[in-house]
Image 1: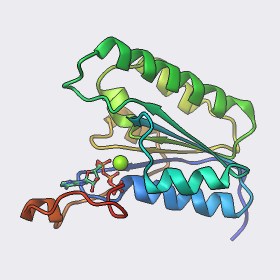
Image 2: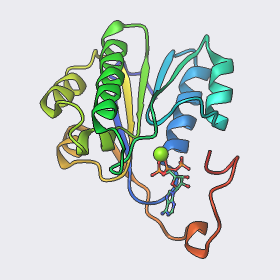
Image 3: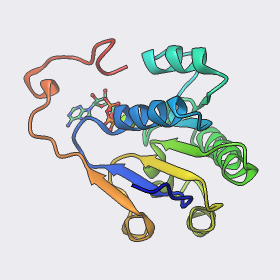
Length: 177
Ligand code: ATP
Ligand code: MG
């Protein structure tokens, strides 16, 4: 296969488990090929040290790993603060995409940011659509909006066939975080 310069817009969505872990795998593959990666987690926040964070922070020369949310949800106690953090993270992402420093930019859980209207949607689609030619973008999260699916080059939907949560098995270190 010939190498292409064109950066892909890849969307990992659906209700089944595997979106973020797939994006991590993609980032590792790119980084292993010497492609610098910017990986931004929009929802998870604070000092929380997930397994992926601990490994990615050891790869700092290859991956710029940013945890920029504070664990916000629709039940947030401070929606204004969440919105401000989402804007800040999106500004960081916009710069990362435009900077020419990264060959891949991962926007983890970004569909929620779009769907909850935490950032200007028109602006989001403009930035994604006009990304520099060599930059791959990976977006994860449930309920990818149709407009995003429309402009994406690759969309994979994780479909839940079984999940241990359904039989009461709680999230565990090494599997969920
Ligand atoms: P992962 O990070 O393991 O790849 P994900 O990114 O696909 O999962 P998210 O929608 O971001 O999943 O949800 C994060 C958490 O929710 C994970 O701990 C995951 O195991 C759990 N989860 C994912 N799918 C389901 C499901 N169908 N039922 C219950 N919990 C789920
Ligand atoms: Mg996820």
